[in-house]
Image (tube, rainbow, N blue to C red; front, side, top):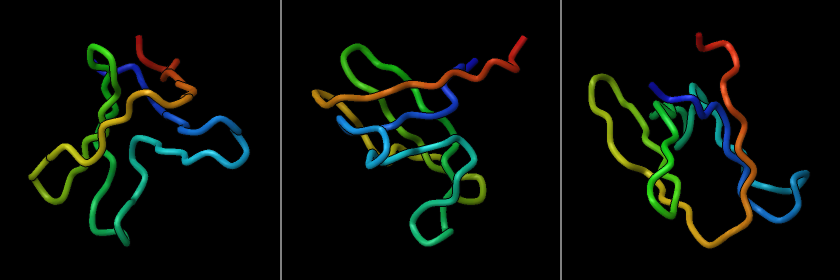
Length: 72
């Protein structure tokens, strides 16, 4: 089960790139399906219809993680 709801990438939160599960990306053709923590990086997976694929991998940069508190 994935507990990450949002990842913000950049040293300055106000100007960071924000990625949220459920957010439409790439002109609305994909939706962020999940954000996962891997060994030394984070990956963003996108979904289009029934196809899920890795879109971005983030490492060696300042990030802020928000967790989904509604998961029991």
